Length: 329
Image (cartoon, rainbow, N blue to C red; front, top):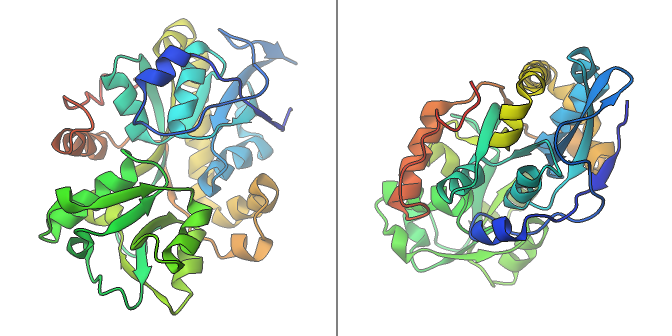
């Protein structure tokens, strides 16, 4: 079975322009065959776009454990630069499936792109220590999300789950969400920019969250996913409407394989962490102690619908997305 990563060819420029605001970055590199997946050694070839972040390692775990092969699939993972950037690649057939944040998929559907959620993937924690957080300097005077009024918070991409949940968290804490300011920057740069005073707070996932909170000069403001939408899905798997219609058996096999993979990953977090050093070049000591998201193949329709209502409230979209209609049944 092929187990390598390749860059993805940029495609669908018109579609990409329509998705402005969903995210940033664009795929690049070698092109996979368009249309239906081919076959290798009796297995169906499928290309799956993933981000080079820790939860994506569950896909490699499923490949290594032979789960996709058991379901008749030969999976090739392709790295993308962002969830929104992978949407054009999926739409044009450069990728058959992708793993990305549901808000980008929902925004794309609202803008007229025919995309289908195939399965759930990873969820933030409904209670306890969550997997992304807003962090500030210990002496900043910022005690809760309402204190972010008039302050600048760094997020990796504007108009997505980070700023959406932070604004709603500020509203819950009694603040004015319209008074919050956001600056877009890569996660690896955020801590240095906070230290220099160029931003007042940063929204960071693991492993950046644990590293920052281990520094006595920083403190936790809170977990915006948990405050705004407990158990909020951080990623789902998706495909194009045309691919789902033309390849229902492959889509069903992929959904079954992903669901089995995620159940196995949730039951074996040490096994998933063991994939991380090779998968994304993570230090073994960091990987061993990494906080993991909850892996679950079920699509949490109600939580996504609640997020859709927030997307309307904060004018990300003009109407609430119909999550059930955009999900493969």
